[in-house]
Length: 156
Ligand code: SF4
Image 1: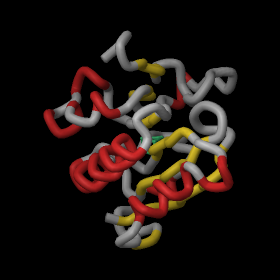
Image 2 (image 1 turned 120 degrees about the vertical axis):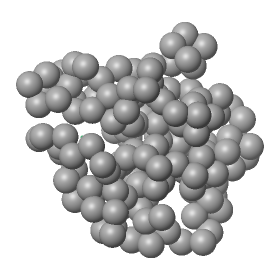
Image 3 (image 1 turned 45 degrees about the vertical axis):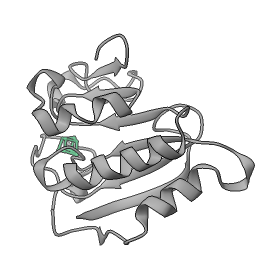
Image 4 (image 1 turned 180 degrees about the horizontal axis):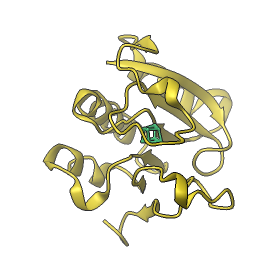
């Protein structure tokens, strides 16, 4: 697997300060996508072997505990899901009480078994493809009004 970016003090994506991890590769190719550079599965950078350790360390760096956000690209496509699930599991074990956010271009109703398996480890899922005609810059955490902010215990 490859990744696009790791941001260790992200105050835009998620809640509070987050460690944010952008996966590389996206099969959706939404018209008007804000991040077309993340479409190519051969783009980005090779994933370091110690990525889980890097993320776990970054979450509690300098005495501040951060939340964790996973974005794309498409974190939950076949190519990325296994590694992403592995990273999320490791973060959840290390930090049972932080909030974990995941963005996906799939709708929750269409999740396969592998995708469903991450739901018990995350807190917030922002789902659905970006639809240019439904673009709304006033929305929190999402770009178009079809996309939903789904919360554990309420929506899944
Ligand atoms: S799912 Fe996200 S990254 Fe993929 S094409 Fe759509 S907007 Fe872009």
